[in-house]
Length: 153
Length: 153
Length: 153
Length: 153
Image 1: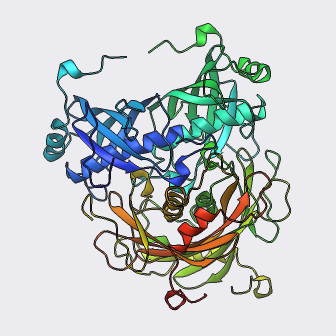
Image 2: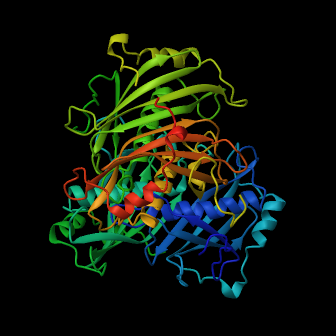
Image 3: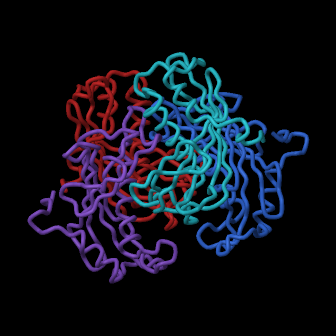
């Protein structure tokens, strides 16, 4: 992906370019498996903050991770820039299930796919709380039609 | 867990004490979800190296992560020491499926549980390769009986 | 260091055993240089919380890093446990300068030495604030006599 | 910095845009101090690989960090994109001293400045080794005139 080209991830309504970092590579020369989840976290929370109005410093409702998963198909390697695709496959009143695809530069198929469940909670009590209207509206924009959904595993 | 007490994780044949680090905590005051996988990685690879004879610098066979998963049940928080329990639920010729439980100090139930699949490959070609005898024997010691296995999800 | 042995770091009043993690190792097979600072942070903040009563979630005074430095002398490698030594070389009204030594198992000389300056600030305004009495008292216990101090660089 | 705009860091011949990640933020709501060094590492090694021909997987000469330092002046916060400026202030036969400036979006003054010393060594013996011609030439392009150099501290 050239600098300045908009990030595109086939099958995902939103995409974000995330450069790898030197220390992402582990001793086997590729991005460490745990770092894939740091990329998941990044594309998700950047969306929630920038588009959904999530206030991580002072908002009363915050999102906590309840479940995450990743299938690793191909290696990612520093210094490449990864494109992270994001879509919503289930949107409840207090929770959302995202699917994420991580794409290597120039590869049409994702190097990894995964899912991530956010439960929204009250910052103080940490009890489930309805997501704010603006945040919910931003997630609606990432929904894909039923037919496109990944079958339940 | 007092210093020096052997790490114990009910239901897991092996356990390792892993202190949290300052930067594990994210902006919401608890260990970040991606770091849980760094703990998975650590208990697994420490076992492979110390007990299985894995040579991460020069061995011809290395283990790559094919799939990982985590269910988050309770928060972990710096500066606590986490006990990571490890067991093997499937042991093939070239792959192994581990289950991991992360326990907070003084809590009988795990704060998180997950699984992790290693595929062993030739370091050069990255094609699946049979795991060395000593490594396999070390994994046999972590197997739990069929009846104890977590049902397929 | 055997499990359960108290951590000892020659020249440092306090020492903490910190196991390395799998992903600390970078592509060259040793703990990445940036992770040394994560170890600095960990020995310092664990002390402030456990001994100094620092309340990272709700306290009105927090410590921010103003300056840090590290000299790398020898490699650290997963899965070894590192012993982090901590001492205080300057203690002001609102700031403290620590020196840290990271020791490999069985090595009498540190693998790395560094310093770290904390400025204590009001959590809300982020303006310098006097450190609480208990916290200050805990830092007094880490002071070394003038003669032992590292000469200014 | 808008997407696609070339990264610019006043006073530094090279600049790289590096987005922050969710887990860079620590419990105090800003990028953790150790992560600044991960950004240093990234701008440096991306240059060495892309411009200097450094082969991190198989090259006979590799760069190890001998010393690093950071002065923190202002906070960086996820989800902002940081601009990392890079310059060379000393270039020896087997070592190089870089200076790095990290710039927040829209701020003319760096949020942090630091230095980093690489010693080039033989991958096998880890003894100092002359840097390859192409790599050295790439570092020459980052040199700044004597008068611009930061005075010794």
